Image 1: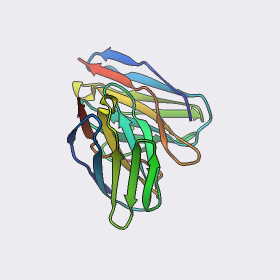
Image 2: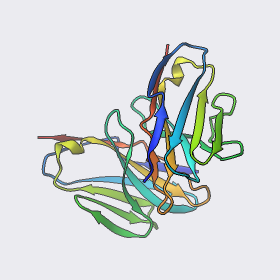
Image 3: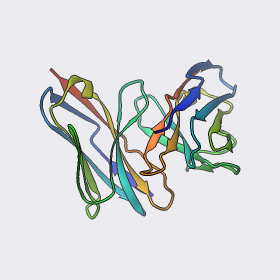
Length: 110
Length: 114
């Protein structure tokens, strides 16, 4: 089975940096995805990590430690439009399915 | 990437009725999934839609309640049967990208059951 844990809510101010953590337990780990979901919209892909380390993509970076079952999403130079839910989703090698965590709702204030 | 069209985008349904949601993809894909997102919640996987065979359901979901068809590699349907207010939710079709396995999502079908 899978067990995914991430904070329910976070707040930050415009221009700041925020780190959203995710811990997971999954059988046959085969990569971890981060998605962004604005209210009333479908989730959109942000990042994918399959090896340990940091993947940087513009203002967003994602880190993975497979031995610790840990990942984080780092958002820099926060903008108001970054207010959204951020979903951590590890993938199982055995089934190829993505199972989503509860999501972290981030609110960015001016 | 894949373009996914879902319909209906929203509907209001009466208790005890059934509704079928359609998902059309603009390219052939191997893996298609149906998710549910209840108000204020994250996404819960209902089933994997298998082409030419019965869908694979997750724990807590059964074929009688959520029959799924997948006649070819670009199309699938999910039926929500004998609906109750607890079925009020957004239902999302998703497909898996070929290279990294990322999921692409349709815009979702928002069902309200009265």
